[in-house]
Amino acid sequence: MIDAHVALMMLGIFIILVFLGFPVAFTLMALGIGFGYYAYFDAGRMWRAFNRLAEDSETLTSVITWFEGAFNNRIFDLFINQTYTVMSNEVLTAVPLFLFMGYIVERANIVNRLFSTLNIAARNIPGSLGVAALITCALFATATGIVGAVVTLMGMLALPAMLKARYDKSFASGIICAGGTLGILIPPSIMLIVYAAASGVSIVRLYAGALLPGLTLVGLYLLYVMGRAMLQPKAAPRPTTEEIPEVPLPKVLWMLATSFFPLAFLILAVLGSILFGLATPTEAASIGALGGMLLAAAYRALTFDRLRESVYLTVRTSAMVCWLFVGSYTFSSVFSYLGGEHVIAEFVGGLDLTPLQFLLLAQLIIFLLGWPLEWSEIIIIFVPIFLPLLPLFDIDPLFFGILVALNLQTSFLTPPMAMSAYYLKGVAPSGILLTDIFKGIMPFLFMVIVSMVLMYAFPQIVFHLPDLFYGAR
Image 1 (tube, helix red, strand yellow):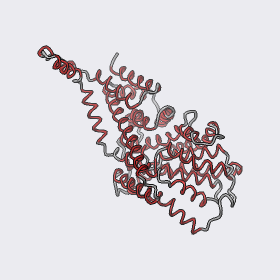
Image 2 (cartoon, rainbow, N blue to C red):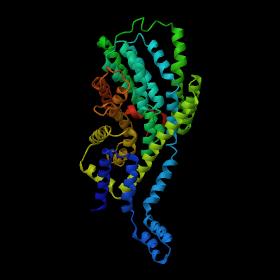
Image 3 (cartoon, one colour):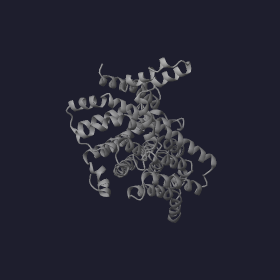
Image 4 (cartoon, rainbow, N blue to C red):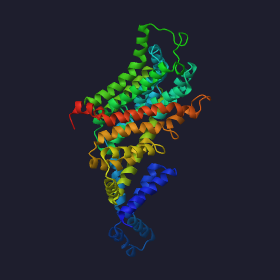
């Protein structure tokens, strides 16, 4: 068995262990160190220590010498260096800060007021409750970037309101599930920061490139909601005056000024400072974290318990991301050293694919991986396998990254493993079945596919803003 075969066996064992339910980060580290011990084995280094065993008469000294020889392998040097590289990565420093901002905003009791305000402001628009719920989801998802939190909170807040207003239960469920996933794509997205760290693409260009595709997807969602409300009024009845009373315009503007605009301003300030070069992503994330605390304080929701819980959740999630990176870097380094990447590149090159065919194949694989795996695991572990292949097909990694971000929307929306559906089912009223949620999700899943087709057909949707702000590629 040659080294390349060992590398492929290593990849196969990893996939099997993941499907068996082993923790991904520790599986990566264990396989990386285990196979790395074989890959970097140097008998000379080991036996230089073992040769001293005959000279040692004391048992304790002999044991220490034996361990010194057994661990005298470069894989341990690699593992330590990779750990230090991840922990000192300036791009990843923004992750815990953005997470902290999201957790603080989530606990600031903003969403209830925001949804009520948008509900009143949009009362004359077809499907007003659905539009208000979708915009609230989009804004809240963008601020937090945590799909489960957004879907769960909006499921407790907006779903009962829509059901009370006689909305079709599948339609209402689909709006919340689809809106809750938008934070993966729309900047400041944590997923894009992780992709930037894994691919070496500028996070600033990624944010600029994701803006128009994200807004396009939101626009398609809104068009569907309003269009269905007009074509099928029974699915989204217009609210009566008793349900949503007429409110004078000055009062509506004041409600928007105290609920919608503060959160929108926080997001725009963070995103604008990054896009216009006023701050690095880490500096902007710091401003966002401070702004989230000030916003929570302004709404009188900044208590010690909420602050402590936000810090705890931030540390837990950040640790998960960091150890995934450590494991992935160690695994991929050993995989490449054994020649695994070369084998995959030769195999894909031998298929004689066109760039479009390669993109479709890659997106299909990522789509299937989205069923059993989280987006973080896909970005950190599997996307780097595709990155070395992009130059073969003259594909810009920026374009590929935005496509992946769009594709990962589907992983939360595709039955039978649609995680957003399970998040919603956990808090939905007893009359909402999982099949009802799956039925409501399908039109929004079609909208995601439409937006991907638009990106394939019109790549300038991705490249226009990066080229406009920072020059052509």
